[in-house]
Image (cartoon, rainbow, N blue to C red):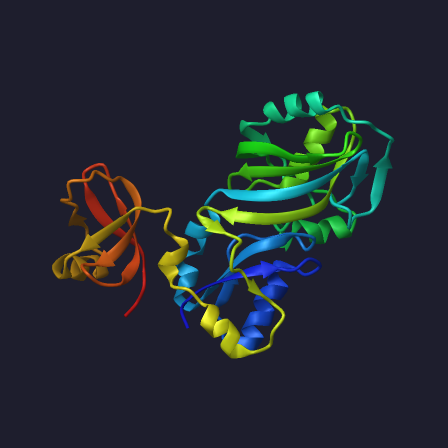
Length: 289
């Protein structure tokens, strides 16, 4: 089985546990996920099955939108309410100051990944070391915050934010930074991923059934999650060369450069390619026949 399952990850389980659950139901080993969600978090978690794993990076690299419930005045070791309380102070956040602070977050910045994250260090994820009380050096990473909207505000210490950001953004770290900019602490009370690129949360698969047929009927074609990429059609002769690892000329009127979806002329999706500045198409990731 090749394709994607767009699941609604429940809270309290890891992204890996969702993968193991579907593997056991479908009896298929080659299944992965596109973009880790914290155990606390819910929302869109694309699972890639079979040859769809070849396109996982193209899915996870898309911009994402999160709905975040923030608790100001509290700091925990994990950055969310599941962690150990480190600091607490009474606070009363001013809405105008909050808006100004969030406005300063828009754009590119460098962010320190939290210790409670899945980034590997010395062969183990950082959260492994954090649970042992070992805090390691992490290099800051460049991220991009596209927008932050205030969805609700209680005029004291709680707010709901909608954050659209680039791949690699740690919302827990961002929320903590927002708190510091306001002269207090902040942690996540609830977190939900509501979009990945053009993927929205409508029609997500719920992990409540053990019926194999339910999940098989929910698998979608690989190109359904890649519609953010331009589409080009290849002739049979071009397709043969692409499958042999060769470049072909892109002669269409519309000028496209970069990563594209490749299709057999009047036929199915065959994979991902790249068009260079000389209008040459090269294969990147292809489905096997």
